[in-house]
Amino acid sequence: MANILIRFTTSPYGSSDAPDGLDFAIGATNYGHQVSLVFEGNGVWQLINQSPQDKGVKNHSKRLKSLTFFDIDACYYCEEDRLNLGIEKDKLSGIATQANKDHIYTLINNSDHVVTF
Amino acid sequence: MEKTPRYWGVFVSMSTYSILVTASPYDHPGSASAIRFCKQIIHSEHTLSQVFFYQQGIYNALSAMVPPNDERNMFNEWKKIHSVSGASLRVCITASEKRGLFSSTDSRQGNIEAPFEQTGLGEFFSALHDSHRLVQF
Image (cartoon, rainbow over all chains, first blue to last red; front, side, top):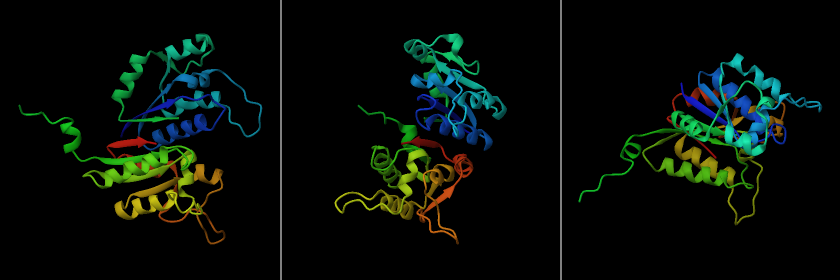
């Protein structure tokens, strides 16, 4: 078993990075790895509640809420990046807790593998 | 004065590597860096276990690529890495079929050829249990 830290750094719907990252995270826990997530930079936008209207686009907010069923409970967002983007704290999904840069460096150092989407 | 060897633990212990390629071959330096990194692993005491192609990285497995004669052919370079190291070249089946790449079956002619193999994330994560390091390009 490895501790895998997955960094989400892009907005939810501009590319397939966000859904691909989630597939990757769920795949990792399904095969016995321990997964933590961190939302950084534009990745913080993923934590805002959205409801995409286009057909064939999965609702990212709903998928994030389901992570706890896959034993992914360690979710963090970068507090400095939230402030830079001007996103209010109460707009963010409750699945992630705030972490400052130092905390994120510690998370990276304590992980066996780090993957960025 | 005797010099203390730097990074002693890193160089002395042998590691098994898994490589994750998420960059497409010619649009981003990631694939070229991954190839260079894999060659270095092969020529060191370390072991290359698998290369997993995910997202746009799956285009590395496109056997139909024909770059100009004086430019590198990523498909052939990966093929060579496989023949020297025996490492598995795994292409994510969901990411590749979404983009129109698939293996040959009895009923259809595919565009992904051996030594590349289409697998799911499951095979990659199962093999990752035996790797010390995962490096993403």
